[in-house]
Image 1 (spheres, helix red, strand yellow):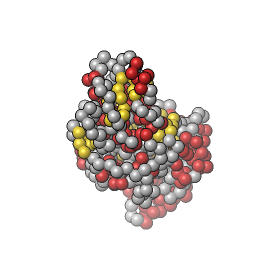
Image 2 (cartoon, rainbow, N blue to C red; image 1 turned 90 degrees about the vertical axis):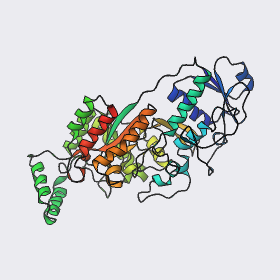
Image 3 (tube, one colour; image 1 turned 180 degrees about the horizontal axis):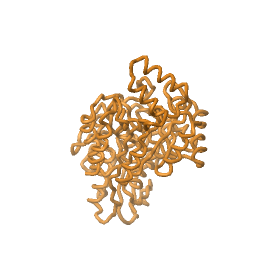
Image 4 (cartoon, rainbow, N blue to C red; image 1 turned 90 degrees about the horizontal axis):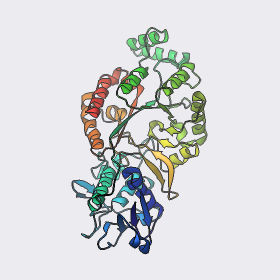
Length: 435
């Protein structure tokens, strides 16, 4: 067991040391603030303090993990071994020239998202406001690198201490905002769409709609067999998030009462993991959120405990409070709509630390790094250009043996309109992941 001395054991210290040692390094450790207990402890031991102890491996500590509440941070970014660092410490006695635990906590807790900032038109924290973007490391999971640095320093000092090896994993996830393009949308919506196509001279689309409705053609958004077969062939476990909100300006899915839609959800759940995709309108309405989760529970005849917000609507800490109140245990929302990269600067799952209550929660967060809409709608890339953008992101995750999560939509594989060529791009992305 690794024994760690620190002058004060706080919730923040317990949280971030759990992240480093328990969740990532898989090594048993014990925290103590007793000098006497630390002195007589046998085996490997380290110090986390602002003052080093002679002859002991020491990581320099700044103030952040000993504080409570939110205080604007005055941060300076420098480099160490080509890695961006902050919360620097002075003294050759320290193992590293910065406090990796404070830096990691600042990033994964999303400390900055609790502070005043400008939101985008959907009231979301934009990547351009982030500390990582402004300092040029949004595309790098620096927290994983910090963890690796700490592990290497400990291994150098205690070569007999065993750490469980980590391995790279890929987890493809899919948001089902609209299960079908034409099927299940009812006579009024289909009639309106048909008339609109005719008025606008989009006769091929009008013809496709009629063929689908009369069973002569597969709905273009019905890409589920393709997705399931592709990932099963490569032994990847998939997750599908279904939108079950009422129809609205930003929630244009199919009615939950449509039988084929319910059958689809059940059939997907037989082969993949299924979660709730809370609607745009539910983000500030707990009654709607509860109703949508219950709808999915009734369809599956079991309770669902995983989610991802529609439109990635996420406000710290309110969104997570609402999800936990509905017994959601895992959330996949943490990422940016406008840019690829690592919103929390980590490519591993981790537990949500609630800054408003200063405690570690049981809600596990799964950050994604790449989304189809980011590449196509926001960055306006062609498929071959998008592939070159995602390759370095994938390689970054591979380098630290992290977890790569991607977010795609069923309609992105339709090979229609703005999504022509994206199915092939996705297959090439998987080839790069496997290589």
